[in-house]
Image (cartoon, rainbow, N blue to C red):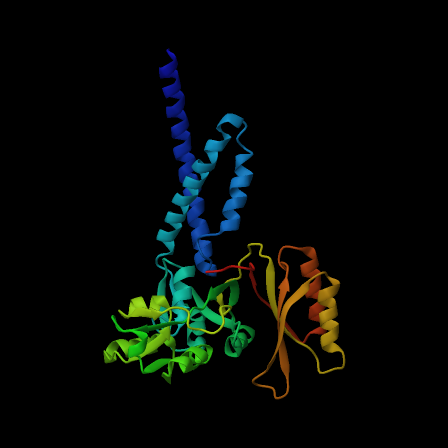
Length: 361
């Protein structure tokens, strides 16, 4: 047998084995997609992909062809992601508000293949997941300018769902109006009160009348429906596109560091290792009880990124504590021991989620 025929025979045999292994791999990919659907996890995980490439490249012994393996495995992962997207395209994602609201935008960026379903408020979106109407919900938990969203933190404390991700969305307020409208045409600006407050300096400088609305997306809808060139809304670029409006002036908010953190909640807690954990707890009404709990956390080597106290609705003058910790409580012995020790001094203790820091969308 000449060299060419021998090479072709080897390639055919290798391709046959690759096909079998490809099928095996894709079956595992399907399992991953189903796992992610249950826990409200996005398809793309950059850290996991980088780790996979680093690990697998060491399996190639021939230094001359090592560089060609990287695009090969990347192509394989791209195919896997497309398959996961197809499986996850049926997932229902709850959010609070209307189309074009920042929660709608956040849900679309985290789950580009999901079916985004609108609910009138945070509680309704949360309960839609508890009832099984949706696989997960994307709801805001904190804004860098306005502070925490207390109602959402209360839902995390009292509800049955788990946080499997925290994502930061930069909020950019734009002046949007009818096509062809200029700043000099505008007399009235409509938006959510918080957006109006964040753009107050610009609004005053232009002499506009400010009118409060239930949210930024509804304001854009009003402007589009009235067809009045003297009316404008303050909202995102995505909202302008959604309602057939155009951006008259970009970034009219006073501060450039306006960011909202959104949590993804689902019925099951992810077992993937993350770099942050969230717990909630109550302590007895005794001197030093909170200090004792905090000392336990510190003793086991965990630093608190956030600690917030919230009044309990059913017990007057009684509070619970929401804590974000740096570190993973699920995959380490010290995390297990810390939770066991905390349970002895807390009236109620609950692990409600894990997430990776600096997940921007």
